[in-house]
Length: 100
Image 1: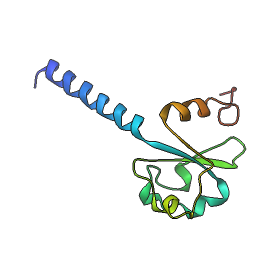
Image 2: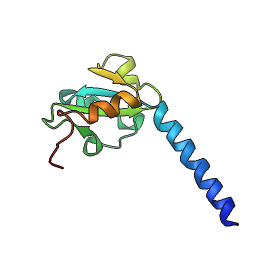
Image 3: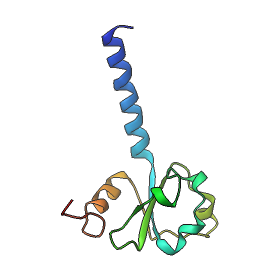
């Protein structure tokens, strides 16, 4: 395979991944609800892989299709955000330590 062909394919894959990332939904959830998360329905794989707020009172899940535990009211998100909004949140003092 030619280098130009490989480069084109990699660029297409990166574009596809970026589109997928931008189409995801991000939910902020109370830490008390963490045991109600069905990790087979979200991008994260376990309690150990969720992003937590610095005070560990909230965590983030991301998904492409709204999970049943949200649809049926088992878990009620504090916020539901898009990619731009989650990036802003992650840069806030509640989620990001300036010393890192």
